[in-house]
Length: 386
Image (tube, rainbow, N blue to C red; front, side):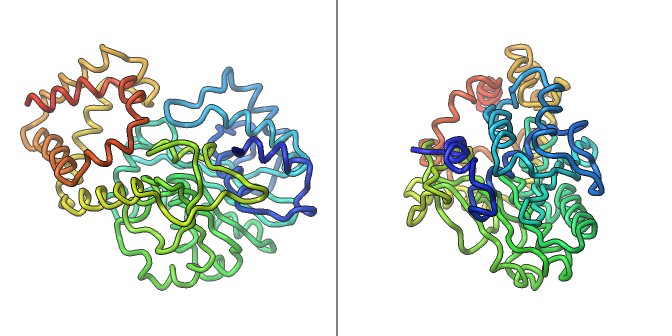
């Protein structure tokens, strides 16, 4: 079994001139975008630094490699391996942006890599440890456009204008994959004409029929959607009709972790399709989402995140570290919600069960350890007693 780190051991000494850019290189750059490069990478496109320089500055600024509850802690190690390699070390980074806006309910970050072959890869970060980021993810279920998507489109247009003579690629992991697709579809035909590939690495779909749009038709053949065999995130909402399935060493929702995707030579190990469990989850979640009206979705999301933020926690890590005190505060907050809000929470959970979620729960069982760490079990008990 081999993963991204093993790939760097095998291919790190081979330049892009010796072995062309491939799908594994794409995921490496998508994972790299999770790093907080503020102060290490210029926020504009007119200046750049090498990856080696960026990682040295990043390490000088960060006291530890902890990335949060759900973001892999291997990413800083991956960045160091990339920086030390002949394949990526001389690659130049620029255009780093990172914005969190609680009022807009937006979490957005991106960085651009100028590859030795002359192309530019615009990498959009997926959901990080922030609660705002997770709220925006939930908003995808009922809003036609979320603020991060608008930012992504503008970012890609700005990068394309700054590098007007260069070919481009766009990509991201998780929500970053969704942003990459949205930006590439709506960036305008002149920019689309310069895009060689759009990589959606297990990113969620859209709440509206994107595939029917003429803007999508112009670039559809260049969109590559890559998912693990039991994909949950990448199968949410309206998504690409064709996708590539890869083998993961994890199970259930934990297959979303790109470090679990198996690499063979210069590509991921392919599978003929989703696993039975993956297909059942896909069907379960679609039944669940379709059973909710837009009003129910809005009320559920607003009520849930009103509870999660009642302790002034900014991140999932804050919630985890809050322990019993945080759990009690969340329960008290739930009791103060008006009856419609409480019904939205309890009713939505009941719909999930009726949609066949016991089957999904069996497939998602690796999350039980995380669930136990966060103070959500006590909240669930309170919901059931209401």
